[in-house]
Length: 260
Image (cartoon, rainbow, N blue to C red; front, side):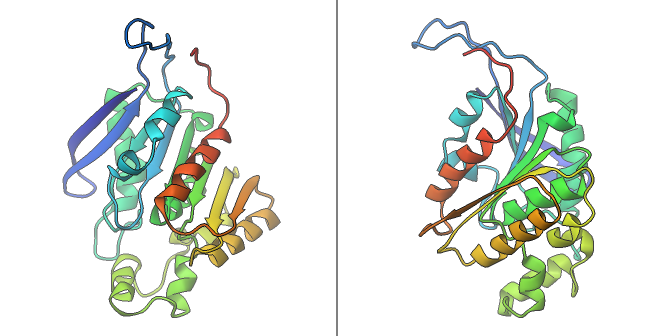
């Protein structure tokens, strides 16, 4: 795999941004004991989103995502939207426009990434799990699969029911406004997405977000989604769990053609 670190000016955000991209790399099988690996672009692509306290390097530092993607001939795009919940915020920073429209358009100029729906996926943890679900449910004509690992699925209810208070509530209101719009509520988006993307949702039972994830998977099942659910006893909100679960998520993707 090649690791590309890109820096470009985002018109959607009005500033320079960084994004990491893992891209399959052909090898000859000579030297270092490597096996021959024939890549076949354009590559299927996974948009892999970080949590609230991380950035574009989080998945690279804390997991073996590069090894997992290499086995599948899969490109992985690792962007950052700061603490913006992958949302066009009330304070005027257009993170959803950036992640959903501008970033794919810019990458298309440089990289051999597939644009087919069946080759385009989203995944993320915590805040990024929410972002992955929002991408796939708002743009189901582009994303065929989304994986939410310990996702902040029910952010709307947590704000409206008073589960979030103090400075964090002020931060969330600066992002979403006083009332969360239907297009930013993944429960509302479940009702309207067509065609329905395939979903993977998981959460440990010791995670504070467990009940909201359980409620999300229940509603998705009622609406006829093809959803895989993992409820893991004793697991909490931490990287060891997410490293295991991203492997489960990748195993749910369609098999890609590669030689190894």
